[in-house]
Structures are given as structure tokens and as C-alpha cells.
Image 1 (cartoon, rainbow, N blue to C red):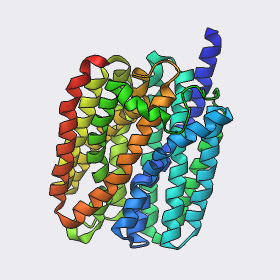
Image 2 (cartoon, rainbow, N blue to C red):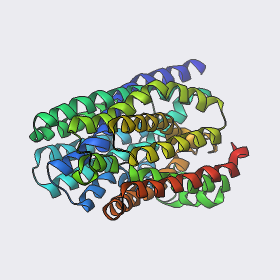
Image 3 (cartoon, helix red, strand yellow):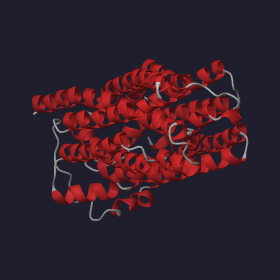
Length: 396
């Protein structure tokens, strides 16, 4: 039995390294290039840019429905995740082909929406195949490769767009291929069907938010931090690209600040965060991460020099390194055995809510107020979340 568990862990780990590398390319796509293409190729409106920035969160809102449907079909989690990734690939292929803004926005949003359906299924796979004492360390290796791939793709993509904006099609084609390769890797991971016992209907699991008081409080804390962080995340491209802010950076410089430097910082600290996640109280981890985001946001939007932006980007990268591990695995520290996917579906749903609202709030505020004022609003929300974490420190 022990040998079987170790074999499943090894196979999952091997293919998750491939999936992680593809994930890095897809992250660079949504965090940097999709918005950049919308700004400089299509001259998109704030509403269109906000729609693109919320592409992933739209998908997270639908994860309870996907979880319910797959549990009813009794399909293995890996097969379900791979199916959604193939559909995402097809949508992104259309976005690479089109020259119409509206088709580009619709298909790109659809692609990332479908891609994010894999999240609760991956948590189910990790929970089944990785021992609890090693999950953070094992996942940190996949995230390490994701960050490396993100940095390399961001640097190369920035150069490609500086050479010719029409080459955005190659960027979108690369994202489609990354989805397809990721699907191939995921379906080869050992997995079991989801239990239908805890997924009676698409939104039954939402009751966990008030039945489990600690879980509900953490969701509220995460909501405050997430809105503050996500409302400024897509604005980094806007802040550096729009002439009215006085920076007018090149495409390569924007990619450097929004993807390459954060990725390097993540590369240097991902394994450390994985080690700490397995050993420290989760509230300590979350407090440190929220502090990184608060400092990075204030520094980035209050200065215009590339040196200050670079330092802020590095601090953000340090926070993102641990944030990725914490976001993917924190429910495993709280959920009863066998219910990690159920808890994760609630977490992804609430993430989707803030992910949809926050970009619209951010683009609205930065259109009406100076960038530093927007940064202080975000920092205030994150500051409240840090204070609120103290209430549940002894619950982890």
C-alpha cells in the first residue's frame, strides 16, 4: 500500500512539472500580454480591459457547477481537468486568429474561464496523491518551473511585440499550445472520481462558509486582501503604458516589470515558502504574504522611476511565490479528510467574485483619481485583512 502511494506521488509529481511549466506561460499571458494587446493593438476601452482582467475569476465562479457535473458523471478528476483545458485551447486558437476586438475579448475570456475549471480537480489530485506533510514542498517545484517559464515567455514575448505588434497572434497561439500540453500532462496523473456525497447540487458547498466559522472568517479576510490586490494587478500595465501617467514604457519594459522581475523573485523564494507552509502556522504565512502585497502596491503606484518599479515588482514576486502555494493548498489544512475539493470549490467561487469586481473597481478608480490614491485604497483593504487574521491564529 505504501509503495502504491509513493508511485502515485511520483507520477503526479512528474507530470505536474509539465503542467506547471505550461501554467507559467498562461499566467504571463493573462497578467501581461492579454491586457497589453488590448491596449496597444485594439485600443480597448476600460470596460473591455476589465473584462479581460476578470477572465480567470469568471471561471472560478463556475467551478461549483463544474464540480457538481463531474461528480455526477463519476469522471476521474484528471480526465475532467484535461477536458476543460482542451476546450480552453480551442477558444484561444480563435483569439489568435481574429483581428476583431470583440471576438478577441470573448474568446480570450472563454479560454481562461475554461482553463480555471481545473482548479478544484487539481486540489483533489494533490489531496489524494501527496502526503499532507509534503504537499507544500512538492507543489513548490511545479510552481518554480511555472515561474521560470513565465519569466522566459514574458521576456521573449515583450521583444516580439516590440518588433511588430501584429505578432500578438504568435503570443496567443503559444497560450493555446500551452493549454493543450497541460491537458496531456494532467490526464496522465492518477486520480479517482469525485465523491457525489458532498456535491448534492452546484452550490450546496457554499453553506460551508457559515457552518465552518473559521473557514468563513478566512474567506472574508481573503476577500478583503484579494480585492485590494486584484484591483491593482491589471493596473500595472495601464500605469506603465498610458502617457498620462508619465512613464510610457516600452512593451519589453512592461513585460520586465510585470512578469520577468516578479518571476525571478518567485524563483528565488518559492521553495522557501513551500518549506514554511509545511511547518509554520498558516496565519503567520498569510500575514507575511499580505504585508508583501501591501508594500509592493504602495511602492509601485507612488513612484515613476524604473528602479522603484523594479523593487516593487520584486516584493510583489516574493509575495506571489508564497501566495500561489497558500491559495492552492490552504484548504487542506482546514478541510476534513475527503472534502478538500468541496472546500476548494467555495474558495474558488469567492475568489471569482472578487476577481470579477476588483478589475472594474480598479479601472474605474484610476480613470477618476490619481494612481497613488488608488494604491492607498487597496493598501487600506489589505491592512484590515492583516489585522483580521489575528482572530483565527489559534485555529491552524
